[in-house]
Image (tube, rainbow, N blue to C red; front, top):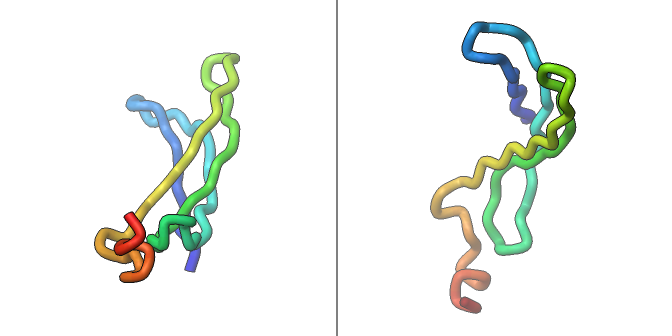
Length: 65
C-alpha cells in the first residue's frame, strides 16, 4: 500500500502531490518515506515525507543500541 500526500497552502492553493511508498529503515523500523521537489511562489523547495510506525523496530536492532 502507498500513501498519497497532497501539499496545499493554508488558502487551499495546490502545490504538489507525492506518493509515499513503504520503507524498511536501516534502524529496523518500518514505515513510509519519499522525497521530492516542489515550487512555491517561484521558489523551489526540497520536501521529505517520513512516517515511522511506533514500536516497529525489530528486537535485534533495538538491542544493538
